[in-house]
Length: 145
Image (cartoon, rainbow, N blue to C red; front, side, top):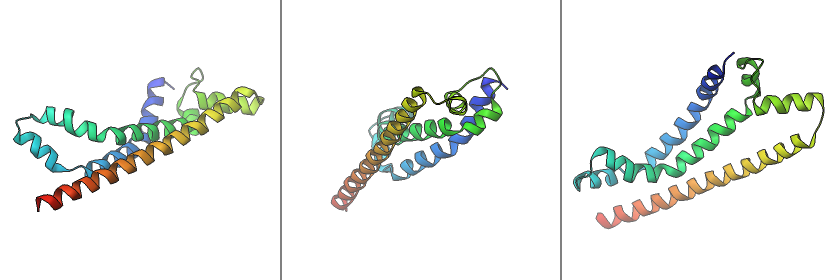
């Protein structure tokens, strides 16, 4: 019945989504870029900071969107884990719909729909970025062979 328990419960639910998205993006990452940075004298931390993270940025953004949407959609988890004095937005919306229909609920629902559209657009950006990266890697590999 604490806020910490609510945060931990939502984190446990969102971690598999984030791991899946980030792992898929890491598999598509060209290891030769890291080797090239190391051969040019970059430390491991500099390589991660300057090469890996910028290439992973789209996947991290989409993973964050998915984690947020998953957590935002978990009404049942919020109801069971949160205390009586904790009110999350999904709980407030649920109690508002149960008691009376207000324009606020419609506005928040429209916002959720817009957020879902933005999330799908983010997924598309990550997909296109991955395709461009794969095409570039194929061109580099073909020229090097």
